[in-house]
Length: 138
Image (cartoon, rainbow, N blue to C red; front, side):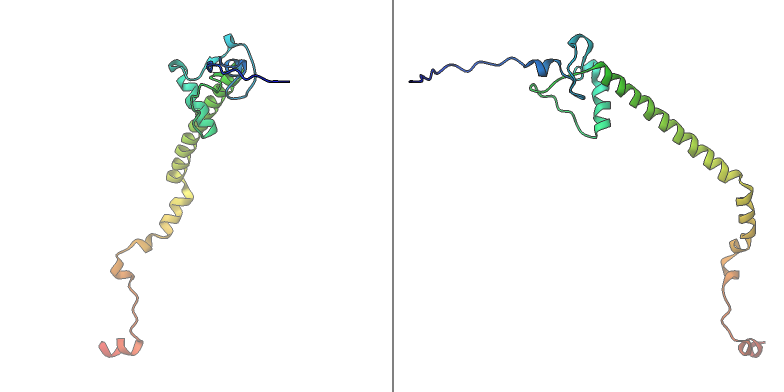
């Protein structure tokens, strides 16, 4: 048996079905008509949010999928809403705790109790002279 090797000019391969129809985030295969290309300018926010979720950049490469499915698009939307909710709550908690500190009667009492500590620093100096020295000076 003789095997002949034919030398051919390399051909450019078309993208596989995997690359053109699978989701870049969850790897599910779905309809292209129901997916979005995350590298298009009008879908930039989806890419930025996906990168925020992963904490890594998602590079654009011709051998990797460019689409995300609707389910991942919804998940990203829920993430965005959740992040906004957290930020709003943290601001609210910050304002309410500041108000509590300013208006708290217990903190006002503590401040009044320690008011004597806020006097002139010279009057707070300790006297280390002995009783005998004080008597002889008088």
